[in-house]
Image (cartoon, rainbow, N blue to C red):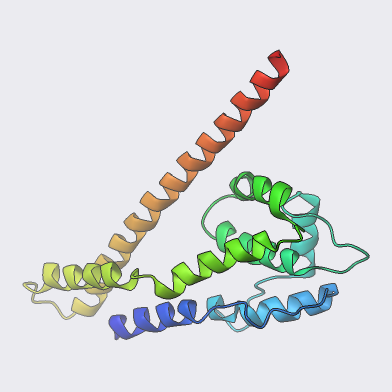
Length: 199
């Protein structure tokens, strides 16, 4: 198993993600699912995995994660919202996704100045220029060094286990930070609402 090659391939797949080919016209549901399932294919683990379905999209609208379509048509802002939801929901709960996206959807969705698209492009630029792979590769090297002295036929498996444990801790730590940030956002919003009611 070539873990280094696997990590590099995953990172390159993610770096190749862009929205330059995003349709300039509003789309119907079938067109949305076709476009986004193709766009998110790099995250597909198994061939029959459904990345985004009509039911999911309808549920996101019902849960107020994004505004409903206009005359059954979805705009570019809807597509951006769906991509953000997809990335976020794989890490945090739907309630947290709602807390993160609600202010953005309320203030930026459908603005004539394309502010949501511009903000999303900044996010994509970060992904494409990010040095995220370097610390991941350092973690892999650390895993190998820790196991160098072991004389075991299972060295590959032990290296994989060690590396997965390090990655898992990193994800756990970042998830915890995200949750605390979301809680802080909610607390600030709650305090703001309480203050306005007292006036």
